[in-house]
Image 1 (tube, rainbow, N blue to C red):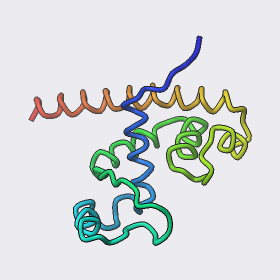
Image 2 (cartoon, rainbow, N blue to C red):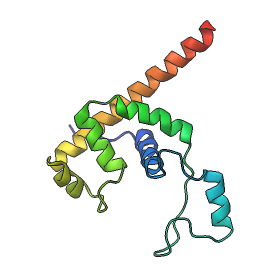
Image 3 (spheres, helix red, strand yellow):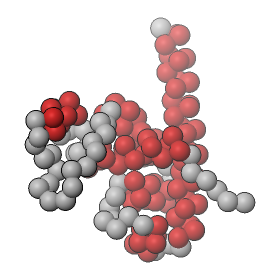
Length: 135
């Protein structure tokens, strides 16, 4: 049986990875960045093609960060290495080699992390609903 990634969790973790590189949301706001782009300013570097900019929601990323930090260490390391883009190459082979694990193990850990993050987010949503009703 082949494990598959959960697409909406992968997208959320990718956004979280971009957020990590923006100093955990402490850098320029996404709106200011969009204004710079609309004014023709390069916001990343002066080399290479202009890339598409996807705004990052700092609140959602902070929640995702809490979910990632709740993961067991081996799953958290896999998520940070893959989605945090620590390794420039960014292939499964490179990241697994840097972590000292097999490629299949990295994929399995990422799939397991997706499941646990989805469960954590679901439980967090339920906790918030219960708290909203009790007040």
